[in-house]
Image (cartoon, rainbow, N blue to C red; front, side, top):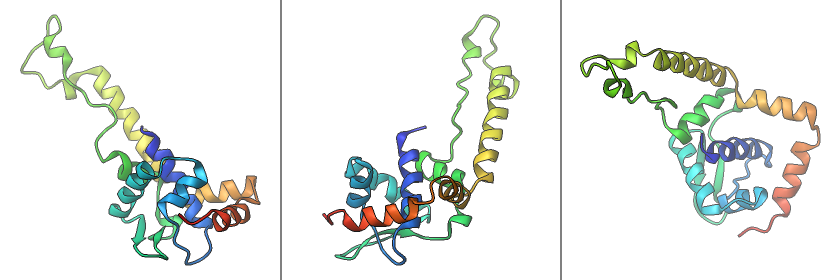
Length: 160
């Protein structure tokens, strides 16, 4: 999984703690986490395409959450950044192994491929079962000052 997933998840949480109605620029979010703005912007644009965020241009523009965090799963964010394809992709290398058969569908018969498919399904189910609201609630219970300190820092970052 790319670092873009981590960046996207944290950016969504940060946007949830921004002042109501406030759009936050990619540059400001990048400064908040000391990340490269151009690369973070690519991740944010992927979230816009997935309808997780909205984007507004102009002097008061930036990014906002497109929907409530209760409606955004971790899997939604992962799929927006990484795409819908499976993490493990069987290449059927057994075809060329001793005793291999070029006509066999190793995606269906390979024990390694089957094990990885089961693990992928469990991973996806777990990510789909957790919302960003669940994560936000846990953060706020463990670190109650996070919303206030996030708003304060966003307000005091210089607008690029």
